[in-house]
Length: 628
Image (cartoon, rainbow, N blue to C red):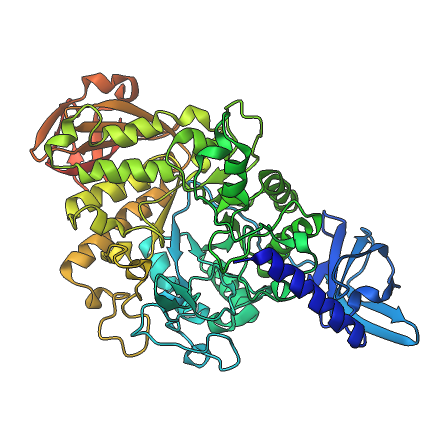
């Protein structure tokens, strides 16, 4: 793909069109702003035929047009505004003049409301990751639209849209609350008005949401802006938080500003199409060649997702302002960032700082799919002497996910007692936490929409499942669970990732099975659901598991013991990763057990009157609340 030639052609076409058309204003972004923001400046993008050839003026008390910026494409003007602290809400008239023509466009400054926003997520939360299109359909009328580039909806086709929406998710908030969930994270809800794309020989829709085409519109097939705002309000009313999934690295190739680029440098350009290598090493490697680093960062993720150039100040302003606008407009609580490692990191620091300035409690955690703690630490606040220092508070803990899965696969096998096998794997990952400023801000997970489902990874073994969920819900960090894990949904990404993104049974009218209800689940599924519910509920109500310290002991003979504790309580987690029952003398753990004489088994309710030796069934994790 000769994307640089295509870009020049688009710019030339826009120049010809601008010369032939009378000036007009078709779009203003951000679509509105607020008075009383800590950030006193905003850069307004004005777009339309020859919009950049107009002379602009604003006459509104407290709003000053500092500068009108024109760029290569005359269809764009970038207006730098300052908003005084005394400015009152109202309709600002943006006036553009050219000769005898005068254009006026209203742009609203709103009053900030007192609704909760930017509350953040912490170790006290349990995040539930769902793909809206595949979770529940509450409004059949918005399943498809003839005027969109992808007008289809067909549940029989794994690559097309299936009709799930925000209304359907809102109807399931009670289910999530009952399970013990405290925060909902959706894959992106922003408009993806993309045509079907050929991926691996099959035509696929962008139901996943990662190809934005208009930042300021939530996709109509999910219900649009009003439905998203209503969902957040309903979630908050139910005591649940909302995590928004952000994408800075790329957009869909039919995004309105890609169809008419403001300037050549809006996206990363190459003499010929260049894909990212997906390699993490050139970013932190002190010996790396510059071209390898450039390919990782500036290469396109896939051919139909143009790579944004965040070193361009106009691009950076656009993305930062949209992030702030989203939190303020919809009231979301936390910010998950897609493909974090492929972004320009100084830009990421600017964006993170802007969000945290407006919303000091907001939690930001990015996706950097790496395989070691050094590379993972690079993208968060860390204790390593890197030339670049990230300010990102948290991140998705891919290293711990890989360690837990590898260890769980060996549970019940001879490898469980090996030098580096079984529980040694998560132990060793956690033993390197000194690289992070605050490992408790990392988000832990066992699977997601890009990975094989957890149950399939561990051989459809319910004992391993329970052990893995126990680790997830009791170790340090913020736990996140992929939708359907609680009802034992399974599959491998074979032949495609659509296999791990199937519809939640019962989310659509007329479904033969309804797994949202106990009567619709099998006995085994209810066992799994009840297990998650019991442990999640206990976690939520016991601060030692979400704000206490972690102390772990070197696994011996396949037995792994760690403690979560604070000044008032202590929880012991003991895992027997072997295929035989084991007796565990506790004298070795006196540093943490001194003064305790009895315990309550959190999962069974059983009381233990003696702690001298614990009896651990095979392939079992035991959670004990220690008592005086």
